[in-house]
Every structure is written in C-alpha cells, then in structure tokens.
Image (cartoon, rainbow over all chains, first blue to last red; front, side, top):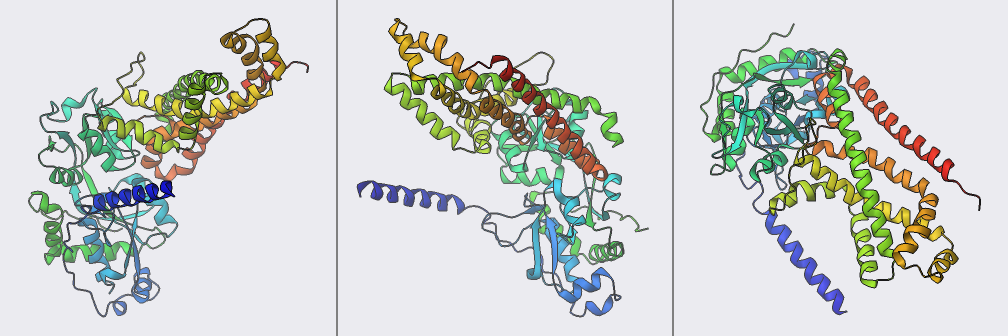
Length: 294
Length: 226
C-alpha cells in the first residue's frame, strides 16, 4: 500500500512538472492576418479542374513545416500552425471559398514533400519549399512567393563571422537538406539532425559551431533567443520558396500564381509578412517576380 | 541517378563510416557484453545484481532514446564525450557519441546471448574445473567461456546483424553514414528516389550477408561432437 501511495505521489509530481513545462510552449497567441474568404468561389472555376473540386468540397489539405518559427510553426498546444507559409495557405484557400478553420494542416518534413504530393496526401505543399529543376521534374512548383538565402546562426561572440570561416568547422542542419550540401561543398563538416530545433539545441550547448539554413528560418530562432544567438554573414545561396502541387493537376499553377499576384498587389502579402517573419525585425521586402506557368 | 554516380565517392565514404561504426561498436559491445555476462553468473552478489540491472535498464530502452541521451542530454549537463580523431576520416565527438550509444545498447543483448551460451555448458564442467583448484576467473577463461561462445554464435550473429542496421539511427544524430547520405541523394535527386533507395538497401544487404557468412563459417569450424 505504501509503495503504491509513493508511486502515485511520484506520478502526480511528474505529471505536474510535465504540465508546467508545456505551459510556455506556443503561448504566442496571434492569429495572423484576416483574409477575405471568397463567398462565391466555386462558380469562378471551370468544371473538371482541381480548383472546382476543392471549392465544391469546401476542404483542402496543406502540408506545412511545424518546426520553423516565423515560417511554419505549431507548438504542442496550438490548434493551428503559425507563420508566413500558413498565411500563404490561408490566402490560397480563401480564393477557393475555404475558411481558415476548414483547412487541414499536415506536417511535412523536407524528406516527404514530394511523396505526399504524388500520393495525394496533401493538395498543396507550402513548407519553405525551394524551387529546383530536379524537384520540378517530379512535382509542380508555382511561385516563388518569397526569396531568401542561406545564412549562418552562431552563438553570440563566435569566431565565425561569415561563410568563409566555416571551413573545417561543424555545421548542422536538417538531414537531407540542400543547405547542408552547400556548406559541405564549402568545406564544413555536415551534421544532420531530424529537426531544426535539435540542431539549434546543439548550437546552444556548444556541440556544433554553427547552424545553417535559409535566413528566414534562422532569424526566427535568433528572435526567440536574442541574447544567446545571432545570424551572421551575407546570404550565400538563393532559395526561392514555391508552392508545391501535384503534376496530375497542372491547371493549379496558373491559379496559384494569379492568387499570389493579387495578394501581392493588394497588400495582403505584405501584411502576412509583417505578422510573421517581419516580427524578427527585418524590413518587408518587395515581393519577388513569379515564374510563368508554361 | 547521374548525381549519384558522379558522387560515388560520397556513397563509398558513407558506407565506410557505417562499417567503421559497426566494427568498432561491435567489438566494444562484445567486450562489455561478455564482462556483463561473467558478472551475472559470477559468485559476487553485488556484481551479479549490477549486471542484471544494466540489462534490465538498457535492453528495455529504445535505441533512439539512447542516442538522445548521449547526444542531446549529456552535453546539456556538461558531460560531453571528447573528440575522437581516426586518421583522415571525418570523425568527431559525434562519431564517439554514436559508438557509445550503440555499444552500450548492443552490449545488453550480447550479455544475454553469451549467458544463454553459458547455460548450455553442462554444470559438471565448471564443477570439475573448480575441483582441480581453478578460481572463478580461470574457470570462465579456460573452461566455460570458450564453450559458451561456441554455443552462442548464432544468437551473437543476430545481435551483430541487428547492430549493422541500428547504425542507421546515427543518421539523424550528426554522423554522415549511409542512411544520412541516402537522404542527401533522395532530396537532391527526387526523380530517382526509388533507385537510390534500392541502391542503399543493397549496400546494407551486402554488409549483413558478409556478417552472416562469416558467422556460418565460424560456426562450422568450431563445431564439436557432443
């Protein structure tokens, strides 16, 4: 009896601790930008197109990242992911007459974005998804809606000041990402982790010298820990974020491009940026020129 | 697939690292596992209980958790594992951490495999050895363990084969071994995903086949008439 009482006290204590540690995760609030949902969307699309189907069903599944503050982030207690990518997703869904609460957000990691699109697990991928010719052979990519470049995140006071200093140093990123290949080509020792947050932890505890990925993501992490971390150096690559769609529905390209163009022109794009990435202190950039769909 | 063929040195280097992880942690786990087995069957109750506790704790912990403990938790409490330099190979404390995680994990399985072998040695052997005046160490070294190893080659080979495949967990903990490289290629060369996957799978099959071939030959060579 005594043992079981000790046990239950212990369990209760553990439970309380775990609850307490959940408390501060994702307490940011902030619902992002309100987008105007098109009431009569279904009628504006031709029969047989994927957009018509989606608009008729009133539901859409969008793949986003869950571990990139500012871009796409979902805390353990959040209902919806927050960040620039989800905002773009809301804009696209709104043009189909789909309300933000009717969007199903699915976590995609770097490795499974193409399989998810090919198998129809998601309708769109908006997950810091750089446009590359290799990827365009397999899936459709419309955009870019945002252009960023690879940079370095270091502990404050590190002797790494720019990309020239990483030769022979350990640099981490997500296993299987383009960023890791780029620094490896520049002579750094690549250290791959499963998620960006694990990589950031390795920088914080001093196990690796630097973390690398798109500047937008690094700024998000630096903004979370401004007295310990900083982003250094100029961007040394160009990453053009696009919206991924299945090659089965090539008609989606023009719709995505047109919708994004409209959002750029009427200021929704800038508002979405300011509510997410802009919070880390960067100025709102000019929206990038988009590729044509043919 | 062109991207893979033109970077084939990366593939070889990655498999070389996989093999190195396997061989070094395989040897370490054999040593530690045998020691644990000797502790468990030995006459000192404290050691025997310590060995049992180790097996209970480690064998029931998933390998992934072991890796998280070694690579994420230990540095956080300033208990990091120092750098390891093995010639021109690009190894570092992450490699050493991988070795620790894999060896600690595998040795609990080695211990149980060896113990099963010890149980297969007739009790009379140890009693006879003791009756001619051997102490515990001598009994183990010259009478029990040689026979126990002979009996436990098949389960030990299974443990080592599992270890080959377990090295792939290191891919997400900073070590550029084969699975890490596979994800590098599948990310860059999305149209050849299936071929790349198949190629790396075959690589693992080759390594595992070599281990099982070796253990078969060994088993045949040391077989005795009973």
